[in-house]
Image (tube, rainbow, N blue to C red):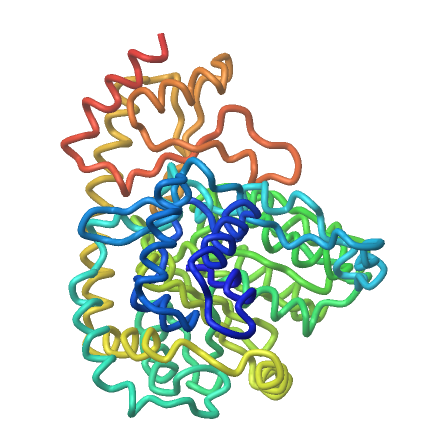
Length: 480
C-alpha cells in the first residue's frame, strides 16, 4: 500500500478528521489507486500515532463517502468510484531537463520503434515464444531443486565469481562438449541473463563505428541492430537450404570485421551450414581476419543428417553464443558466451565493473539439473516428441494442400518453414490459422530486404500428432 500520504503527520498524533482528509487527498490525487490495500486499523494506528478507535472512525467515514471499500473477511481497499489514475512522475515546474543533449552516439542511433519489431521466435506467441510447450517442461524437478537451493542459501553467499557460479560453468563446459561438440574450459564461459545481454556485451566491448558486419538474411534483427547502434554497417547475405551463401563473401570488395551466423540451426529457416560452406567460410575469415559470432540459438533439435562441428573448434577467431531458453524458458533463460582465451581479461574487467552479481539460486538449480544428467534426459525426451509432431503436421499439410504448400527441406528447431500458394492473401492465411488454432507466424520481420511472399513458420512442437489432422482440415476449410 502506498503510504506517502502519511507525510502530512509530521508532528503530533493524527485525529479522525486529519486522517480522513489525508486519505481523501491521496485518493483524489492518484497517490492511492483503486484496489490498493490499506493497512489494518491496528497497524495504521501505530503508524500515525493515534488510537485504534480514531482509525476505525476514519475508515467508517471513508467507506460511507465511497473512498474505501471493506471486503468481508479480508481487508479494506481503495474503492473504484473515487480513485484516479496513478500519478505519473512528471516534472511540472519549470523547463524540462535537456536529457537528449546528454545522449551518447550509441543512444542517438537507437531507433524509437525497435521494441515494436519482431526480432526472433522468442517474441512470437504463435511459436510458443521460442520455447517448448509448458506441459513438457521439467517444472516439478525444477521446483524440488529450488526448495533444496533455499536450504543451501547460507552456503551460496556472494563470491568473486565474476563470470557466474563456478560449479555451473564447470557443468556447462561438460554439457556443451556432449551436446554441441564445443570443447572449452570453465574459465572461458561467461553467464548472462539472456542472449541479448550477451550480444550487447560483445558489441559494447568489441564493435567500433565504421566497421562492417555480415548478417544472415533472413536472420536475427537483434544482432543487426546491435551492430548498427554501435556505428557498424550491416551487410545482409542470403541464406538457402545449405545455410549462409558463402560464395557472396568473395565478391565483397572491402574489409569485413564481423560475421554473425547460426550454422547449426539457422533461425528462422532451420538450415544447417553445409560442410563445404563451413570450410569456405573458415578459410575466408582466417584470410581476412574476420571475427565470427557463432549463435547456437536454434541448435538443440536436428531431424536429419550429421550434427555439424562447431565453428568454435576451428581456432581463436570465433565467439560461441549458447542459451538455455529453447530448453527451459520460462524456468531459465541463461545465456552463455564461450570466449577465446585472448578475450577473457577484457570481459572479466568489464563484467567486474558493471555486472558482478548473478542469481545464485537459479545458477544452483541449473547446476544440479546438468550434473544429474536430467537436463540431457529432458533434451532427448523432447527430441523424440518433436520428431513425431514434425512428421505428423508436415504430412497432414502436404496431404491436404498438395501443390499449394511447400516446405523448406532443412530440419532443425521447433518450427518449420512453409510457403503457401503465392496467389493467396497473407491476411486470409492468418485468419484461417487463427480459426483453426494452427500455430503460424510470418517470416517478414526476419528479413532486412527481399522478404519471400507467403512464407510462414509453423510451430509443429506445440501440436500433438492426434491434433494435426483435425487442425489442418479446419485450416483448409477456413481458406475457402
